[in-house]
Length: 219
Image (cartoon, rainbow, N blue to C red; front, side):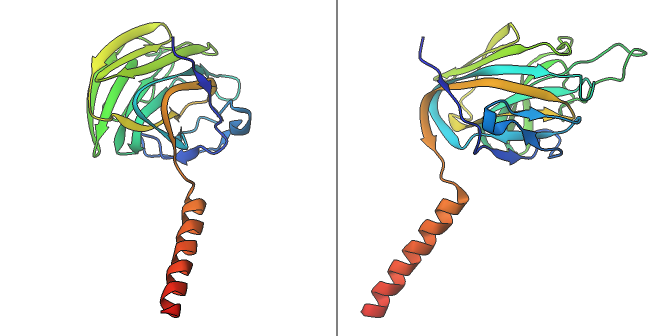
């Protein structure tokens, strides 16, 4: 088995939720590598690197009830280009009518465990078990891997495979939709390409402009 490398989430970016296009509440714990969403909030936290080709991405997620007891979406994103182009693996908790309200659903209407492929804002369901739900304060392991066009996924002991060649390269990340949750032990294996921070690009651009200006002023 390939060696998995622990991830540093300190410089990961806050993004809109991949389904509801919301970013509410802050991600805390990112400097301790245990990102957490509190207060029944939404949004994605996306890596500062891209994975090219085959990869494995794994970790733990715990939907928590102490801060806010809810039943909505916990999930993972991969092949991420932006909010409109990515894969998202989501999971809801839904109680029976009369016991609790039904969970927040994916924009596709999917509930339970689902894998969605989002291309230019158009959603396609690649996998769904609509009556499989998570349990409060239980820690679940996830493992996502790509080998050529084969995606192999295990979330909380439910394993499945699908074929897709849409996003061979992209970032990875985590997300919640109107849900409190903690993520931990995020690890990856693959061809990692670091994405420069916007400030670094800006400084480089200014430096290059200065060189060009000096060249023309001398000529």
